[in-house]
Amino acid sequence: MPVSSGCEEFHIDPGEDFSSYRRSPINHNYDMHPLMEMSRLQDLANYLMEKKQCRFVSPDIQKNSNFFHQGKTIDGRSLDEVFERIDEPKSWIALYNIEAHPEYKMFLDEVISSVRPIVEREQKNIFNVGGFIFISAPPSVTPFHIDRENNFWLQVRGRKRITVFDHSDRNIVSGSAVEQFIVDRSLDDVRLNDEIAQLGRDFDVGPGDGVYFPATSPHMTETSNEWVVPGDAVSVSIGVVFYTDYTRQQAQIHQCNTVLRRLGLKPKFPGTNYYTDIIKGGFGHCLADIKSRYRGYKPPPGSY
Image (tube, rainbow, N blue to C red):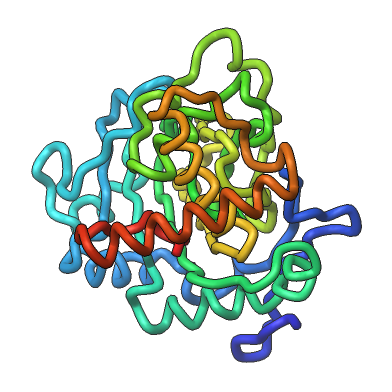
């Protein structure tokens, strides 16, 4: 159901051909939401900075760089100075886990409520809804990487090119690399090279545009100077992310596959065989349960 703030009704329009299992363009009107105003985002950043949930990258970062970010500014500027100069070239700040702020948690829940019926027709039980906001001035990039969650990526200010790759193509990211990320939180083997760079699908997005892509879809972004005019030189994007029973089962299968791989076997990627996936998912769940109970193991997010 669409939701409203004041007299404005806000919603995502995923389109008639939408499927939660594949990447696709979407439309929305959250660029008009009051919580997306820059002054409100600065207040949110100050709130999250105290919780160590703001991230900064080097201005020289490239699409094929390690996705390294840190909790303090690269040049020692204060957060207020960052926002005062946010329209300077290569400025970049990410606000992580915005659901920590009560107003933005409500905002994220409202966003998901507008798409919950259509997503849950295919993937049951949406849970752990979160959000990440990226604020940058061109030229800037976000390196090639994958995430654990399904993602409704919404552009709310400025323009950006987001390139999304097929999450099921093991020539782009190998099965072992996906497992390593899901289980051990490592992106070391998730790297862009010339052979796969042309396999992605580009989405050029502006305010009101967006992209949906499923969990573990490789992606990267680029903000160029082409659209910049005085007074409009900042890109703001928000990733509204979530897990489902399906993504949880996938993570549990990856946990099982990791064990099998360490035994010298070559396990098949999730989705190859329905019945094998059920067995592997159950084993992965039991394994995580035993390790968490007796070894102090902390299961990966969304997997337990």
